[in-house]
Image 1: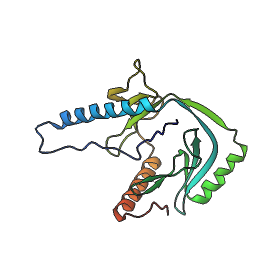
Image 2: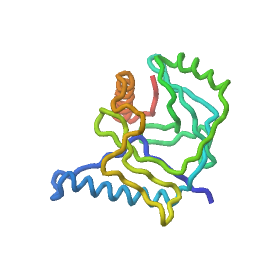
Image 3: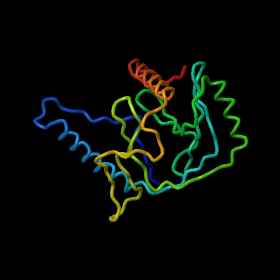
Length: 196
């Protein structure tokens, strides 16, 4: 029987009870502990798997374009979209951002020369970014198919990715803020996710 593994998208934030007798730090510690328990439970059910990259896609419109790779495994349907609160989410790996969809479609021509590649996924990371500044850091390392020797490793001080700059380039930050505002607008009107 095949297991289904689901990842959260886009973000999970702790909520703090202002009227609690516990401090914010104590509540956050409790949140992390519960998160670790939940991740351990899920990780035992999701075995390591292989991912293949052999197709590309695009998102965008007249003011932005994105070229992305579609990760496939025997556990996911090709080009599957997942329902989320404000529409659908397409599992993808962003390769590059462009000024518009036309430029992204031109870049997609690389697919005709692309040779399929695959890699093994024995673990996943839980990422954290505080506020809108800085890069994501590794908050937890979650081995898949956990057994008695394995455990979810939560880091007290989140780890930076090696060789990644601590601050985003300005254009990346601006693009991310544009997408965040778009998601906020979609959520507030309760409509389907549409890119303009």
